[in-house]
Length: 178
Image (cartoon, rainbow, N blue to C red; front, side):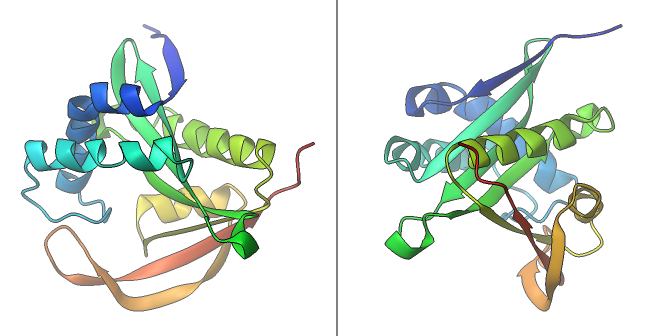
C-alpha cells in the first residue's frame, strides 16, 4: 500500500495550527531516545507550547520549518535556523530533523534533509552546520549524505534520561544557487 507524501513549508500561523501534531512528533522522538533538547517525560502540552514559541522566529525570518504529511498524518519535520549577524548570513543551522518512529526506514529523514539543503542553497546559504548525539542513527544519516564530521565534544548534552553524552558536529558546504 502506498501513501501520498506532502511536503509543506510552514507559515507562523500554520505552525501554531499544527503545534499539537508537532508536539506529538517531538514527544515521540524524545521517548525514542533522541537527544533533541528535551528530557524523558516531556509533557505534550509543554512540547506544543515550545512549538508555538517558534512562530515569532518564523515571522522574523530567523527560522524556516517544513513538515511532511504521510497519508494526511504529520510524520516528520526539519528546520533551518538562519544567522542574523551581518557576517554570518551565509550560514544556517539544521535543527529538529524529526521522523516519527513508526514512519522511519522509508527515506523521510533523507528527503527532509535534502529539502532543507536545497532550500538553504536557494536562499543563498553556502554553509550548513548541525550537531547530533554521537553513535545515533542520525549521525549515520548525515555522514552518508555528504556531511563532513567536524569533531566530537564529550558530555556536550544530556540524553533524554539525563545522562551526559558526546555530541558530533557536522558541516556541509553548499553551492550557491543563483
